Image 1 (cartoon, rainbow, N blue to C red):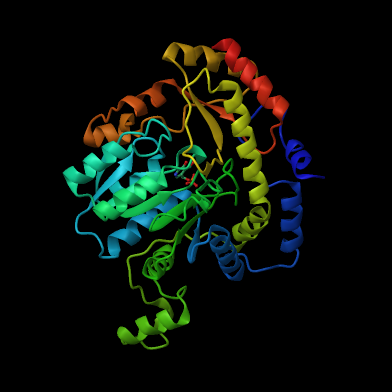
Image 2 (image 1 turned 90 degrees about the horizontal axis):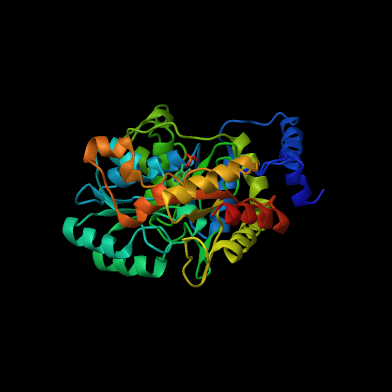
Length: 398
Ligand SMILES: Cc1ncc(COP(=O)(O)O)c(C=O)c1O
């Protein structure tokens, strides 16, 4: 069975927004492996997955965890305990996901919300610079919205000018690239999500990647209670010696107030299989995205990827002219059995978790996405004919 027919056989007849990238072949392989009665908790397979992931991404270190949200939590807390921040101000996106921001609130940062860029829908560069000047924020959280890479050359100029630490949330942008580099290879720390419907899945899962050994050590400790057992032997030994700890105690000494955000070798086994077909799956998404835009970009406000970048969208987002036009289109999509939803989370500055603490954060672009945006299906199981049929429904309703 080739990749496409294997996917289609797992779909129900209507057009779903997402499909399970874990197909029958993956499940068969998993069953075969389980019959060998392997260790299932985090162990050698996780290490293998992490090193394959780092190689695929061209980064030095990666830590597998149990979700993209956990990956974000780890990034924020590693940053906090790293001692590298002179203040706790962090600039966060208005368009992204709640858990791109939630750890800032949970860990007592001062989050400052930024308007969405009118082209990529990532951080608006002019607003970002004004906020950096005004607040001297030490950290910035960037989301590559829906698999459209942000303008990383311009971000790097701002990073050099203002010296902030960049957290890159690539949870919904796995496999997208900018000037030949995969997204998630730009920030000091970068997160990925392997939830159902994303470019690849480990059922639930996430990853944090970095080139910074000190950050990597912190991530590994914080992921597992704050102990040093997961560090390389030399670093573990160095900590043990520095803290005058004897060998009997050393596996259960806690150097940081950690969490347990580990995943398992079972999920890592699935992840290794997904990595093998990831480039094929993201290429299908890129082709589908281009097909949709060819049909629809002239009639709708859509994200524009920067020159030299490759999109890997998890859904295709469109922004209607008005709430009324969106209502009509959504109604027609539903009637035709085409799944749809709001555009990501719209403007996070309009959600109660934010407004109840900081008041409403209203911005022209983010608000328009909030009130007029909607999703169309994009996954590797769609054909050119599917996309034509879905586009036709949208155009007729519009
Ligand atoms: C931008 C972004 N960040 C973080 C997450 C959270 O990932 P997870 O669902 O694996 O916790 C998502 C989920 O879709 C996301 O889109």
